[in-house]
Image 1 (cartoon, rainbow, N blue to C red):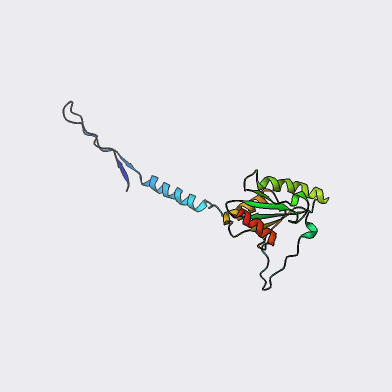
Image 2 (cartoon, rainbow, N blue to C red; image 1 turned 30 degrees about the vertical axis):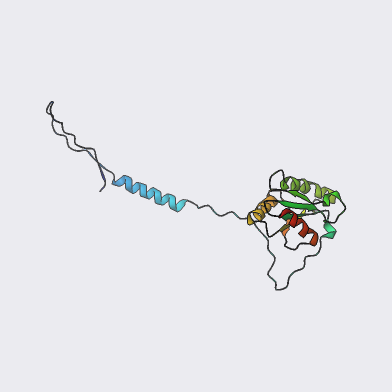
Length: 186
């Protein structure tokens, strides 16, 4: 039994003689039982935090390597993002060899004034240029060997934040893209 002793209640030395009082005892058994019942109740009824994950569609596993067709027909919808080392990004709109000013590669970073600003601008403008709201932006993400896992997660977060309808992670680099990757991996 748990109890709380409050000390002697009798008189001390000297002074008036007082009658000796009995020790007052408080039984704490019920309080300890209640505390354990409450702890048990909250442990059983609490839902633990679930890990948050982003849905990611992966291709079916085939023995043959699937050849991705070139994106020449949808070059006005396509943005290619090359992830490099030191948190640097090279991106271009359309085809790399396109004569348009949008096809010129640009270096940026993962800040809200960096790649997010450009993606948001193109998410809004591409359906207007295409004349069809169902034809949204296509983003091709190409991580280099110097990019980190954090860089890939950051760019996937940007795709979710900017509500990019279609994006893919690809590891096939053209010779021109290899030159761009070398520039940002220095």
